[in-house]
Length: 558
Ligand SMILES: CC(=O)N[C@H]1[C@@H](OP(=O)(O)O)O[C@H](CO)[C@@H](O)[C@@H]1O
Ligand SMILES: [Mg+2]
Image (cartoon, rainbow, N blue to C red; front, side):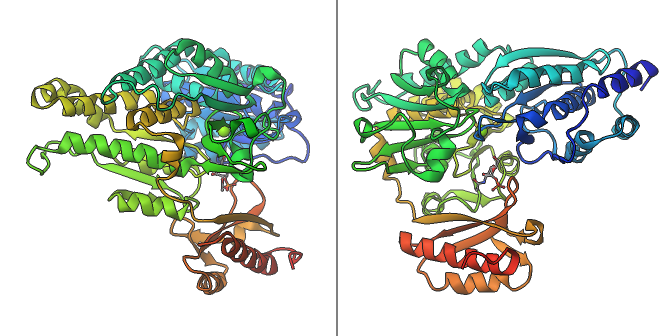
């Protein structure tokens, strides 16, 4: 780094002192905290983004959001050139940068890192960053801090894209680096064109009457509701009733949104008895999670169609298209390109969904919790579908497979119209569903297109399988890091002995399944249990929570 660069960094550092007594870390979802604590961190993440852009010689994204957390919180995270999460390799540097207190320590840290990573400051490549934020009131000031951080790397440029959903920004970063038009308009056009393409390919034409009732969407009082309003205006094929859009004055994520609906299993604010039996969906605060639900008669209870059920619908549809593509007319399959379909879940996936998928003959892999693990695994297949039960997920298509489909689609037409259509449907899905991260808006359009394709109502979809009753609890412990797990978090290897006791407790319940793991975002141990009845799932979860509390907690649960 030259003198000009050093003095720019030093001068700006003094304007953004870190908050006293707070140590932040770049967790699964970037830095998150009360918004009043974040200015200094966001400024430093601006520097980090500019360095990442120089290192990769690509456009990088910086998103200001705290997703489903309360409105007074905020957060910041980086999108890598392919639109995915920032490489885990850079997380320790992100932590050190955020916590550097002394100006010279700060400068040395950057200097050392730049040298270690061989980041070049030559004039041929300058840093370029796309910036966006969700609807939180603190977002605007934090975005300014990010710009200040970026501008203290010589030559760096930032483009403020204003209010976007997290997946929109990730999509734009990916598109820009692929040399594709990458405006918000392009995003909506790609989604809507591929949605229309899927609708045009519905067997026997459009079945408009089957899902004639409106889709009702809870926008979490956030950016997702706002963007869905835009999508709705551009799309004649869908009738959507949007509630809790950010314009209606309700509080972000308060009694609304996908996280609330999935965890509490009750209707969000703004929904009630008039919606009984209707097709309802809920987005989270930055629109990267999606769940569907049915309002039940009497009270506020719902039937939840969570990430596992969305995944099952997608898997069934993709499997059907691959089967058509691979049949050779004599009951066997042609050997050119089978298109290996893989499903990725975590241990939180309801056991009934995993059984359903395995019974379909699908390859189901489990990874630890956290989108970065699921995404990485899904990328190993020609088509990889991943979802967390909470509604974050997508479908990844391998480039080679897409090129093969593209190049063969005309030839397929001469073999069979059905094969041709199957290829076109798969290509449309690859354009509709966000290839960078889980995206509630594109997920919603895909669910709607598939339901129309199948001629299914939400009730028929819901009957694919019946969820096993489950219970999730959390226990406050002295030090959550003492719990070490293996086998995608399904086994505790340390402290010794706990797993044996959990095994013994599980043995008391038919189809009992239970695991514990340290949370990556809260200072707790999470307990998950499922069994054949709600009472049994509750009882199993409770007895394991008491065990954890006795061994590692404050012993207050009994
Ligand atoms: C059980 C659960 O829902 N865990 C969530 C939660 O992680 P924990 O490590 O369980 O705190 O937040 C993650 C980030 O948003 C999300 O990926 C994950 O699914
Ligand atoms: Mg989110």
